[in-house]
Length: 78
Image (tube, rainbow, N blue to C red; front, side, top):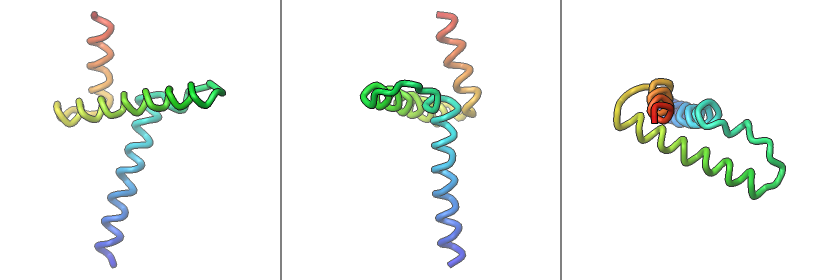
């Protein structure tokens, strides 16, 4: 029973991490559009951004904030 709780807690933490990443790094909660199609597109682009952040973070082994900062710096310099 204790092992099952630990597994569920680990899964719950991954879900929390996903939600935090979508909010903090992709700005999904800032969408003010009322039309469903535009809101859906905004959320999907946020999800795409999140997945790219996640991939970059896994590839480089650096933290969320550092990943976002490096991408932002690179885009600003170009």
